[in-house]
Length: 172
Image 1 (cartoon, rainbow, N blue to C red):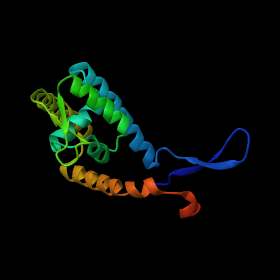
Image 2 (cartoon, rainbow, N blue to C red; image 1 turned 180 degrees about the vertical axis):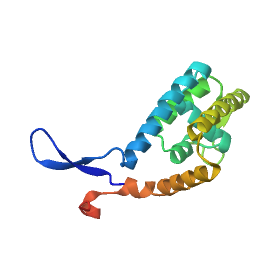
Image 3 (cartoon, rainbow, N blue to C red; image 1 turned 90 degrees about the horizontal axis):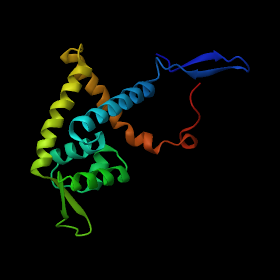
């Protein structure tokens, strides 16, 4: 499906405009933004944490005793957002900080028992919402979708480095 269409504005020449029905970044953005906003609202109401705190908690459950920088690398969040979330989680006693044994300048983060309890409650809600999102897809379709998403995710380094000047003009 093409991602542009010809459009004649009230004044001016006909030009290419996005066809949102075929533009993949539109769907990724709309899904991601709606997912994040609704998750954050729900998690704040039920548990007093937002979606960024949940992402930090979930990564610490996956990889215990890591630095905040590692969370930024894996999840793709900026350092400021992770730092604010870690500070809130430390203040709430869901996360502890200690100097890294290999580099005393860095702090290692770990979930506390209350952090793990919060993780367990949040993961139940997060996976229930994921099931709702994927409702109506067969197991094969879900596997195919996940495969497509992995392939898109693998392109992220190229997107970060993309420069129009280097890569030439867009194809006509």
